[in-house]
Image (cartoon, rainbow, N blue to C red; front, top):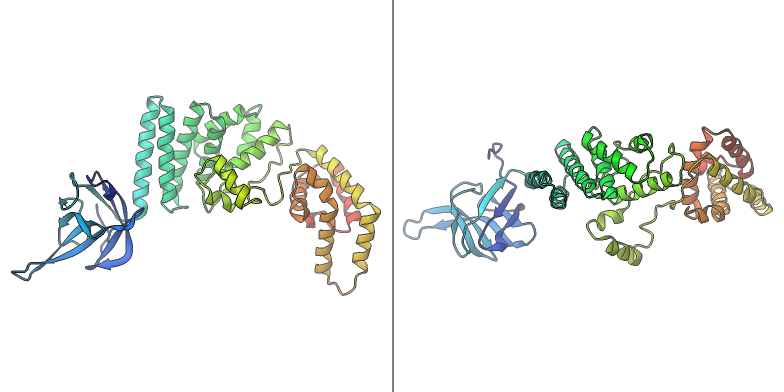
Amino acid sequence: MEYREGALPQAIVISGAGTQEANGIYRASEKEYCNAPIYEHMELGADLKITREPHTNPKTGQTKHGWLLGQRKTPIYGAPTESLMVPSVGWKKFNGAPPVPTVKVHEQLVDVFYTLADDAKCTGDTAGEKDEWQAACEAYTSGIDALKRSGERFGDAFKNRAALLLSRRANAHAKMQDWKAAFRDAIAALELVRSLASAEVTALEAAKQLGCKDDTAAARILEEVGFGRVLDPGAPLVLRCVERWIDEVLAVVKAGGDMASLPAATHQQADRYLDGVDEQTRQEVIKRYLPDANKPLGGTGIIHNAEECLTLMKKWEEVLASRDFQLKRAALWDRTGLSYPVRLREQKILVAETVTGVLQPLGFAPGRPGLSRAVKQMQVYWSKDRDCARKALELEELADVSLADLE
């Protein structure tokens, strides 16, 4: 491999060693010895190191160097060389078991994981050619896991590999008729590379299998994809947020709701922390330690169409026109010493508390978070339905605050 002038490799991959523990990825640490980096095993840490070591001939006094792969200070394999770079050939057995390892040197750590991802794609493609779809799916998953471990999140090299692996895995899931997993992976692939035709084909078919009646409805869902809003930008290969969004979108589809106002995706820190665990374990952890983490901030309520919007606003009208609310509103305006921003904030809180009893049974969170979610969905119908727009104006008079400000 060619290196930039003055650059030293940042990662070493050891494979095929007779001493099994020695196999794995070694990363250059911040420590140096003999003018070269000390490489430590990524999983076993300092117990396994690759270091450049000096050896002085007692007769001549001449010092020569070589690279040693050691386990707890015991040399198991080594290669004599004066090079400051770990050699890929010339390794010999010391205290390790035969055979000696295959050594691959990488300029950057990310190159290791990109190579693993590329190899996994090839393995999956080979399995797919034999119609071994479960094996193909497992291979693509191992490639995706390698990209997760790379530490990369952006850039064409990362996004193109990730999108291709996700698209291939989506197709494998489709072949096994796991349509929800196929839809999830295809959506994620299109979020990364919107022009990926193979992913779009799978996504459209999966959408129809999951309840979309025709191509138009399926295509409407895909109009929301490719803008970086569905995937978590800080963890683009953690797909729980995609699954949650799909569940909400399909709920709209199955309820015959208005496809013009699909729900927005939500991203949660718990998704990152619990990535890779099975769903049962995930739910147990969340229930015990993070009871609110699996709930979107504003709840799960969805207003599916203009008719539902108008019905909900009529319920708001009843509680906002009530004597109790109007007395509280008047008392707020009679309070002295309040600046306009503070008065407006208190008015919003009062409205949120008043309509909570109407919103909560529909799945909206109590207080201002639930009110904000509801208003955001209502705005779609205020702009295109005359009855909803008229009722919004009537509610503003009752609430004494702009409804748009409640979002």
